[in-house]
Image (tube, rainbow, N blue to C red; front, side):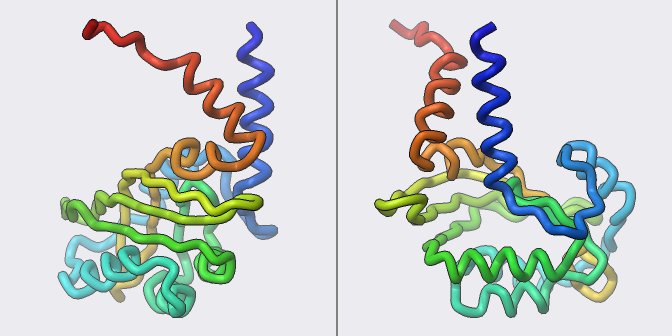
Length: 195
């Protein structure tokens, strides 16, 4: 069972790297928090196409100088937000999170691959290319993800849940931690049976 201490170490480090807010009132387990949010934030089934288009435009231009201001306009005061780096009910924390993206010097390009609307649920499938500097040198990573969003009657985002691989997209590029994550990934790689 050599793997267990390694997994616990990675979990501890990853938790320390994730953003949190002092007034966070949510479970640290995002699956539990997400399931609760699905019950708490019903959303409206009558979302105007322009509202969806504005949100798509916002996500497609993450890292623009006005990212924080756009977030302040698009997100509701009462919300659930989880993007695998932060889990919060605080609109202020969401705006601060997006401001940190810009101030941190990250370059983010999001290509929207598909937009699926089903009743109150909007699913955005995207390809994200991010360039950032974890310590010394700049790295570029590509990841595919999905954002599940719901809106209130005023057209504001009340639920935002991202599904993407932070290990491949972010943490594997952090010195020391990246080596540990790559080592764990190698242990779970499937054998190539095509030869």
